[in-house]
Length: 594
Image (cartoon, rainbow, N blue to C red; front, side, top):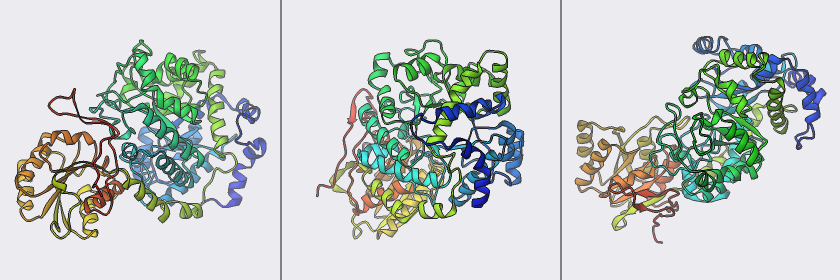
């Protein structure tokens, strides 16, 4: 990491000229003066938040250099900053940015150093998607919490606040200052392929309370929270990564449902709001995605909701925003709609030059760019980036994945596991009568940084709790031979634990065949709780809401009776044979009755 002398030298020019405090807009005059000295090219760069491959800002692995050359035309993060003067960088696991906390801290420092050494250099706003649950970019040994729907099942705002506070402290310690969380979408569509368990639930008021609490936690820890995906992505059966969803809610329904958590986030002082690549005809009938919609972003978000913080697009590489317009038009139209930060365009060169040309041709004014840059710099000032752009190894060691943080995550997880079925009080399992367990089921790719696979995590946790558990992964679509193997193995077990994941016909066959053996079967929904409707014959069913280790270990403790099931459904589960009827309502959840 840079020495203190290097840090002071690199930041001296900016810090001395600005001496910016983070209070309100008191420093606007200094920020405007800073903007007035920027070249047009520097202004354009400040609007972009871009991916870059590699664990280091200057010496990434050769494969990452090759990927950067192919996609960005530069070798390293430092070169990208020098060429495009980007205002933000987003970390991804698949871009090899997040190997371990100390490496991430070094990468963050290298990025800051590369930017601050430029003429009129500015600190970079480093961001990531650390939602917890099924979407995480920074893994173990950092603290990983249950995801949003699990927190919704726990129902405690103090847990959402604690999650935000601890996760925020750990992100800040490794140099990440903007987190694209919480999800403020109200998930009212069980078939939603992109939100689902990333949402706190289906009740607008409950979601709003948890969103506001998490925002307070993150921002109290000095990390910008981001409510997403405005104006609301909770009622779609299309994934905007691959298609162009249409939300058919009326304006009245939007006010009562989708808008409620975003209003709560704004009241809580949210630093940034992310747009959705969705059509919402009741709010804008042009056919454009919300990301490119002046009526939605300027008219409603800025005007009606009174939001004056940073607006960031969802990734500009997603199909939902690329359907109607080319990659050169999308960033220009987004800025015209009211966006401030342009996130992860497919080609930075095309997008950057398109914005530059739009200003040179008069389609965008430089004053319009200045508006967004002022919001971005206000946020950087509020986060203390002008005074303290660097982080330390000591801070990482003191903060990230501490025993106290990990214990808090475990405590919160125990309050989320939801018991939906428990015939003849099968649960908790008795170690004397059900000592030998077979753990089967889906083993989806583990969320970033968790050990996985789910069957192995459950089997290990149950063995540590005094059972003898054997894992037999059967996959999300088990073949007839795999089902037969599991059924044969069940003959030698006292009980079977089976994990279901967005249940398929083949998974359903597996569970039904296991139940038919006469062995006690405990099913655990390791993603959507809706799976239970497909399995009426299962004698015991738990909803864990994710297959991250912290949630699976909590489910194991509930199965073993070391923890009581305390979660309550934050979404309704409809009947499989008649979706118009509710099988288990919001708030449903059994206890062990003692």
